[in-house]
Length: 155
Ligand code: IMP
Image (cartoon, rainbow, N blue to C red; front, side):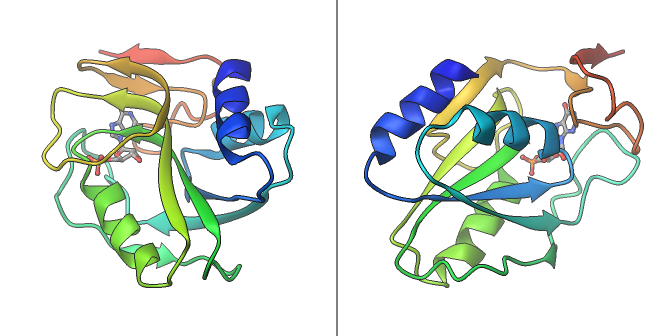
């Protein structure tokens, strides 16, 4: 976490990026990340309609909470728990780009590679995995297991 935060801080030195977390799964990660950062940041959140009770994406993504901090002309770092097909992030980036930020980069706790359907540039990531369904540390399955302090593979 410290290395990730240091990398972001060195890239954004002299600026005040807005961290935009994608609720709900991101809460533990963004809290840990932001606390390790040594440059000033602002924080806001968006929420996209989630997977529901299944283990695969429906392919439809809907924003149910938008950002409230003005992001026009500002550097934005979109912070996500896990990138799977990439559809959620691609959709959110498109919506945020319409608001005219100076830049948008993506920071994901986990970059899950196997099922990627759309290319999304994950600029910063905690770690990469090929496959598997991960729970804990904010990540859920049907709203369960979010509270677990560590991450687990659901079988
Ligand atoms: P994508 O649109 O397929 O990239 O899906 C991204 C979202 O799906 C994430 O923000 C999670 O909410 C959910 N998701 C994808 N894979 C997992 C997983 O392994 N565990 C928990 N949630 C996941």
